[in-house]
Length: 174
Image (cartoon, rainbow, N blue to C red; front, side):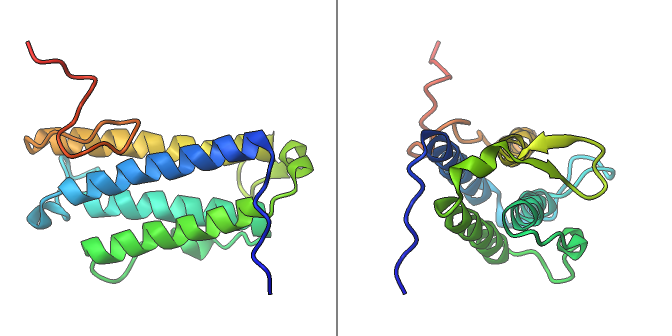
């Protein structure tokens, strides 16, 4: 069996780069959450740190398996029954991303223009828009996680690139 040929389309390579770069920052964020605070939430109505990270993985898993493998399985969105440890969260984030990248590597470029109907969603978008939606979803929740960290007095990682710990080019000393 030969390895899949990576997509040479510039648009897919840009999407892939964003997925990998933002996931690196999400994993840095996970590393900054104190162990005793994985089950913490700022308000009762909000997700815990752990639930936020798992939600990112679940949405990617649900949409990418649906969009790229025609496997719309709503059970992927159900709450996780097991205790959410840092190891489990990292495995879910990495496992989901591995599936996504594998499927993108063999994605026919012409499919990006294909209109996709997602079950229970009243809009019809081209595949490219749904793929970017998954990127934007992670960014949205990564921003929430940064606010959670700030509530604990922990400076979140730089939002756009995985930089060395504490390096923040957007914050200048006064």
